[in-house]
Structures are given as C-alpha cells and as structure tokens.
Amino acid sequence: MVYHITFIPGDGIGPEVAGAARRCVDAVSDKYGFGVKWDESIAGEPALDETGSVLPDKTLNSIRKNKIALKGPITTPVGEGFRSVNVELRQKLDLFANVRPAKLLPGVKSRYEDIDLVVIRENTEDLYSGIEFAEGGKQVAELIRFIKRRTGRSVRRDSAISIKPISIFGSERIARFAFDYAKANGRKKVTAVHKANIMKYSDGLFLHTAEKVAAKYKSIAFENMIVDNMCMQLVIKPDLYDVLLCPNLYGDIISDLCSGLVGGLGMAPSANIGNNYAVFEPIHGSAPKHAGKNEANPTATIMSSAMMLRHIGEHKAAQALEDAVIKVIKEGKKVTYDLKAKNHVGTKEMADEIIKKIE
Ligand code: NAD
Image (cartoon, rainbow, N blue to C red):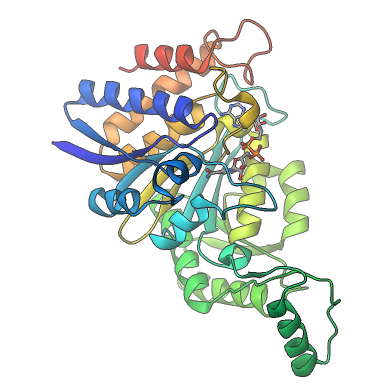
C-alpha cells in the first residue's frame, strides 16, 4: 500500500519541524510495510513570491486529490497584510473540526500530574469568518448607520468592526463531532465553552444547539462553562475536564492554555478534519525567533503525524511512533531546549533519536 500525502513545509520553524515529522513517518512506514509518497506543496509567503498567491490552486488541488496533508506552521502578518492562509485552508476545504489533544507525557516538567484533555474547536465560523470593516472606510460608516437605524445603538465613528457569525448548522455538526469523538475514544464528559451570558444570540445559539445534541448522547456527561471561568478552572483543576467543545476563537485560546499545562506549544499536536479532507499540523505557529536555528521541539508536529497515521488506518505504526516519542522524552537525554534547560539537543537530533527508538 502506498499513501499519497500532501506535504506543506510552511515557514519559520515549519520546514524544520515538518521535515522532522516527515522523516519519522518515512521511518515508521518502512518498518510497518507501507509506503508514503509526498507531494510537496507551498503556501504562505514563499508561495506569494513564487506564484502571486498565498494559497495556490496547485496546493489546494493536491490536498483535494490526496485527501490528506501534513503541514508546518505558516506566518500571518499581524494587523496588516494578507489574511491567514491557515484559516483560508480550513474554510476552503471545509475542515470544520479542529481536534487538539493536550496530554501530559512522562518526563515533561509541569505543575500538574495527570492531564488528558481534548479541545474540539469549530474551525469555520465565529470571528475567524474574515468579515471585517476597516476604520475610516465608506463601508464601516454605512454599517454604523445601519446599526443605529435597526437597533438604536451608537457605534463610535472611528471604529473598525469584525463580524461573528455562528450558525445552527456549524454548531450542530461540531457538537455532534465532539460527542462522536468522545464515544469513539472512551471519553466521559463534554464541556461546552461559551460566553452566552454576554453574546446571547451567537454564543447562546452555540450553547443551545450543543444542549440539544447532548440530549441524544445519554452515555456522555454534558456541562457548560463560561469561557473566563473555564480558563481559571483549567489552571486550578484541569483533571476535572475531558473534552472541551469550543467555538472557533475560544478554542484557539483555550488550546494554547492547555498546551501550557502539558509542557508548552512544542508538545501540542492537532488535526483539522472535514467530511472529505484532513490536514494535520502542530497548534503552534512559525515561532520566527527560533527559525533556522535547529532548536524548535518537533514533538507537536511528529504527534500530529501520528494522528495522521491513525486517521488513514495505520494504527500500529501510529502507536509505534507515539511510543518512540514517549520513550525519548521520558529518557530526557536527547530533547530540545523547552524540555531541558541544559545539555539539550536540536530539532534534527531529537527526531533522529525518535527514529532510532521506533519498534
Ligand atoms: P508561535 O506558536 O509561533 O510561538 C510562540 C512561542 O511558543 C515561541 O516563541 C516559542 O517560545 C514557543 N514555541 C512555539 N513552537 C515551539 C516549538 N515547536 N518548540 C519550542 N517552542 C515553541 O506563536 P506566535 O509567535 O504568536 O506566532 C508566530 C506566527 O505564527 C504568526 O504569524 C502567527 O499568525 C502564526 N501562526 C500560525 C499557525 C499555523 O500555521 N497553524 C498557528 C499559530 C500561529
């Protein structure tokens, strides 16, 4: 069996961590008797320079053809410039579920003893819709007048406005995904995270839809929590939680918080899943200050590639790769700077050690 997989190295630390994960997949596939043919594709700044588009059709079509991609992080300019390629990719391929596990591995320094959380983040709606009106423009002035007419409420004239759409369709399918995930993975409880006390319509709709879906899954406990309280609860007693069902923005923030409970961003993998395609990537970004220095932790991307192997049905290979990562981290000899203050190794050397330990 040969799998065709799109490979997007990304930028910043992307090529280093994604390259490490690719080598791990090659090694484990050799051992477990299947092949992987990588279709290397570009996106982000390098693609803009080469093709004039940050997300070239060629890259999208490669994923459409292969159905599966492994991706490194891609930089998004802050407060200006092009919109996030990552968000565009998720929207264009309708990768509506972002699965972000945060599990504390033996040997990782943490303030906690036993953390095993999964954030299920809605990936296509909310404030990530990209519908925004810049301050000072004609459109925002028109919108402000419309709001005044329809609601009687005044918005300051020098405002910028971002739109937060949340639909029954989007909320229902992500809630169902969260409960199905919980059932399939032996999880006991789903907590819906929201701010429905303030955003009564958008977050309220997310919550009410989740409640309706929850009623159909009697074997899984359900509760809801306001997002600010959720942050505090996760820091104080994270062991009380299991699957966290979140709209897009809170899911992004909460999953970074969860990564901090299990050793940091270098430890947090993810999968973007839709009905037709799946893209696997670390939750962290391109970490520009570490780029090109062979110092970033490859674990998050390697664990994302293990999620990918599970997704395509190569369960034994996925387990072997995860076990190898766990062994290397537990031993604590050949790990990166974020896992060990002194005598650490580089990205490449940690990946070499993981490859050596694959059984
Ligand atoms: P970041 O996740 O890139 O890094 C924040 C910090 O986390 C780093 O400075 C570093 O200390 C640590 N870190 C991250 N990854 C690490 C690793 N593998 N090993 C060790 N330490 C690691 O967040 P940022 O600096 O806020 O964002 C940088 C860029 O990445 C931005 O342009 C942002 O838009 C983009 N981004 C992309 C994605 C994606 O491609 N899916 C996700 C998040 C952010």
